[in-house]
Length: 250
Image 1 (tube, helix red, strand yellow):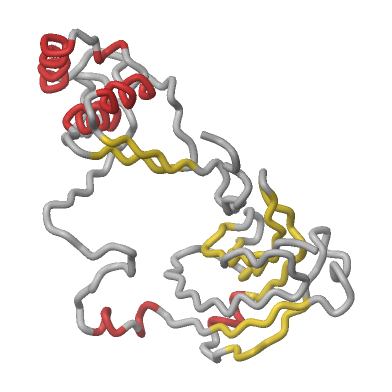
Image 2 (cartoon, helix red, strand yellow):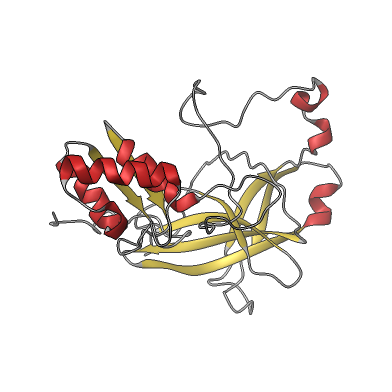
């Protein structure tokens, strides 16, 4: 038996599959029933929709089989209801097992038909947490920009801003991503006046040199101050956490 889960992806004529969504894992099953209802905002250049069935393992996942639908089939606007799509092996040569198939219902809604577009307002992306005031989104050209570099607009310095945000945290630091480089130094060159002032303040209060600290040291420093530091790290976009992965670990 396997621990299957399904992945929804799109792909272009020559590019690799881009994962859009996945279901939960059904343990020890050769006939899983996910009954998953997924809404996917789609803004990709894609020639086909790919439905993968994968086997969850502690350190990755194996592709059991896949089915595809041409994009043109979805663009004609006709819903696909309770369709059984034959599964192919990873090499595309026949089914993984006789009569292997995945049942799906699909509907494509163009953005021009969206009610929010007709009302000329946007209600926000569906999320676990509600929208709150005081949030900020900042865009960066590069992770690091040298002081004094010529430019016709004000460029942000991502590494410095991350360092300033961590140093200024009073209750919580939450780091999430595919990977976290604990040995990365955030301050590598000449600091901006604001960062230099903050570094001098920390040096005077705690006797530490922020400019010489790696990210891991910075997070440990904040933890020792009493700030809660949480990390959510996943090094593979298709890998669900296996229940035994952290068993008997601290």
